[in-house]
Length: 266
Image (cartoon, rainbow, N blue to C red):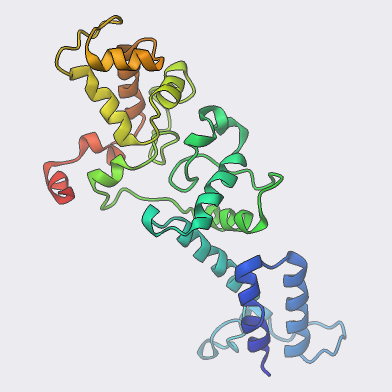
């Protein structure tokens, strides 16, 4: 039975399900080295670098299985699954969302766990040393960070831009116009339940609603409803929402889409 069958076939299913501990990787690499170079347990230098043997035969190698690369590929596929559109995501992704949010680096928790929706769609980071974070999620995030996994605005429609999380937006400007953790941010999240860009835009559009006086004691239905929910000053809250939207760089801002892009959404 060939080395590739043992290394690549027998180990990968279990790795896909449970992951492979570092000591197991080290052991497999050692046994592979011993088998390929017929060392029989002896300690001696290799005549050819093992990295060379990982290459294809027409490039001077033996197409030897690189166990670390294969394990990383499994984690990369997990990243791919995790970043699928919501209707296509398996159940485990929703559980992972909450686990990753709980493991967020402390400085990003000022918006609350609920607003930490997806670390690849937002700019917050996961503490890979967090207690309680499963090893498979740690490996997934490590691979995601290694290859700088993040969405790009290229080809993104207005609808997609509106569906992006507003808090710690992946396209946020380096210097924010309005910080996320201020009192209005708390109001927008906890009173108005705003989590996405489109919801924040709808919040700002109430400034131009018919009958709104833009005063603290405005009697229009929108303002009365917002005050009943607990918003101290709906007009100021909505004006701050404009600043929160201004945190987003132009290429990610749906308010700046061209007429052509708007038509493509229909």
